[in-house]
Image (tube, rainbow, N blue to C red; front, side, top):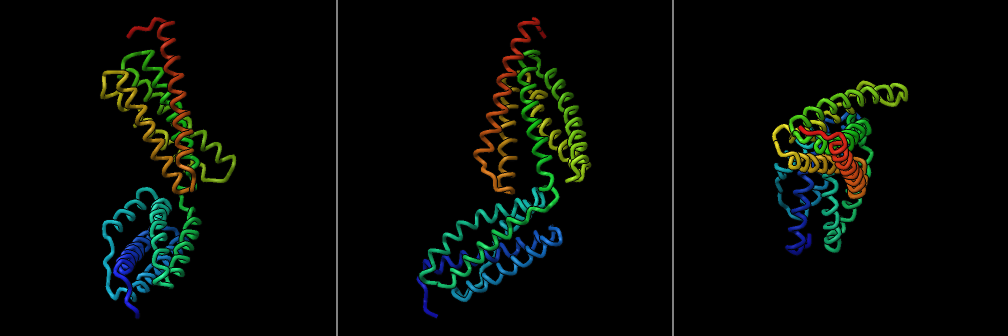
Length: 289
């Protein structure tokens, strides 16, 4: 076999490392997946191993996988679901595909490997059948409602009552009651539509709402300065929106920037209007606490 330039060999060794690392990631995640998805993941994992061995013909060297990346994506799949972990990994693989094209002149076989990598992506896009993704709409309902309603309520109560502990207790009671109401409403909605398990849909909605409520309210229980507590709450709201929107953008291939912008504008606008309502209510009713 004709000797390849050192820079090309270095890139091929990098490809080897990526392929053998992803082989172990796919195998680990396949153990968590549903039967049909597990078969697809096992097959893709075997393809990655085959790609590794094809690159090995050019370098003549064994390359060790990245244990940290295997641990990271396996843990990510356990926490956030395998669809999220794999699609996030495939996004990183797009850069590797660009590098494939740089060695095409020296390694004609790279073209076939690139085509197979693209096929992997298309197959992975179909892996959207794990339970938590079927109920993503229920979770979106819970998170969005909690942020929009509670951030506005906290803003209004802060200016009306001007006592962080009192505001926190009032918002917590309101938020937990709203979570139960939202969960019950989603249960009834899904029981009528018969598209999802109504009990699970209600649980996902209520749980997402409760978690959001706790994150939004807790600054009021540890701070005595109301404006500082409100500022922290609004920052938490933006962080929740950012993290949840990113999760959805990866799993559902949505535009992160558009969804994030729209949700932040909506929640912050409602919070601002609530500031005004709370201030006017305090002045009109002459509330002093």
